[in-house]
Image 1 (tube, helix red, strand yellow):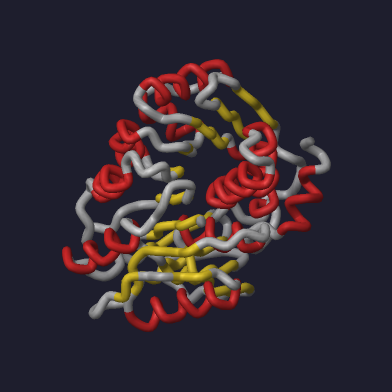
Image 2 (cartoon, helix red, strand yellow):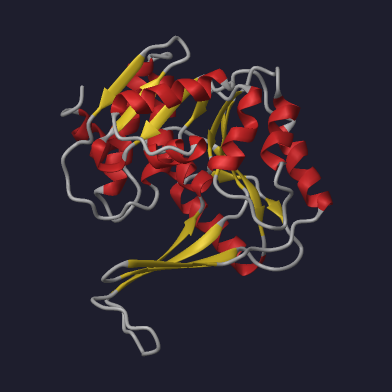
Length: 302
């Protein structure tokens, strides 16, 4: 079974307008409200690709109810910890001459509610896959990724981590099955600017030395690079297409990789290609990738 954790889910209010002027009334020409969060995106794309997962995390209030409702419409099972006070955050994403985001802070999460999430995670078994993705709200301790991985260490669970610099570096000691920094994040981890694919591989190996098993590096329009635990490396240029929406593309790559890995009985090259195609399919669409979109892009990769 696949599980995803989103610590701070949101309702994303996405608007488009020709121009945005601060301090004045601006009228939109497109609007949409979507349940968001990196783990949630992974669960939705997995379902679009034909695979079930359970979305875990914390939700609260009327916005939390809407997040659960939307996931149900996608056919995604959820088992969130329900908070008694506050509401799941609302993020406003303005797409005009440039992109502007205003992100909410999210509800308070007590230690008792954290314990409820740990109890759900304790039920995972050998062979399960767990995706830990996204930022941690201020209401949670900054070592919660480490706490979870320490609890599950040695149980035979494949753990995928897609998180920012500090969170990622701290969990490498627990040997995550897959990590997915982008090329800029990888450089930031070591205080360098990466200018070549060979440099990217060099620093990906440094992450393996710190404990990571497989390292998937996304490079936006330049495609991606995979370094496996066996020392094999693969590079794939991005499929050609028009960028419509970059939000969720990285999460889609993770979902695609997991799908490809499962469907090929552990073939890393096939998993990699599936990941690249899925990430690109989301980037070329208003919504998250669907199976037909992914398979069409795969024709130009494989």
